[in-house]
Image 1 (cartoon, one colour):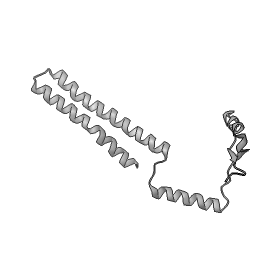
Image 2 (image 1 turned 60 degrees about the horizontal axis):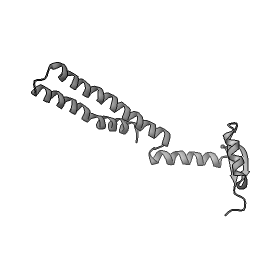
Image 3 (image 1 turned 180 degrees about the vertical axis):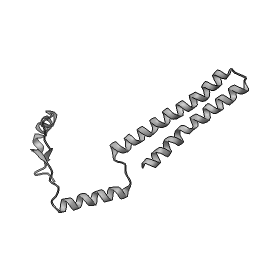
Image 4 (image 1 turned 120 degrees about the vertical axis):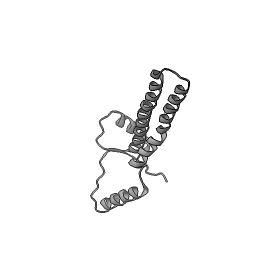
Length: 128
């Protein structure tokens, strides 16, 4: 999902609240209810439209930001760039510690201590 799609989705998903508010105001007017209640029904429709629409957009943006949902073309471009950097030896992974698989509990303790300065690697020597 891109920004425009997120905006359209939020608008589309919350637009029915304006319709409900307007319909409520219309039916209240037909029932000859006091203008106060008609105005509040319409106002509530607009407030819910704004709040719910914004909340939907924020959640959708958070999902995209934290899960990395992007267009496949962008992902390919990023992967090719990382590939070029790797081939040029411009990327150097930061490795804090290496542990054999038999000492994986020690590796978890090292990470949980909160003092690691890079990646903790688990070596799989002797495993297929």
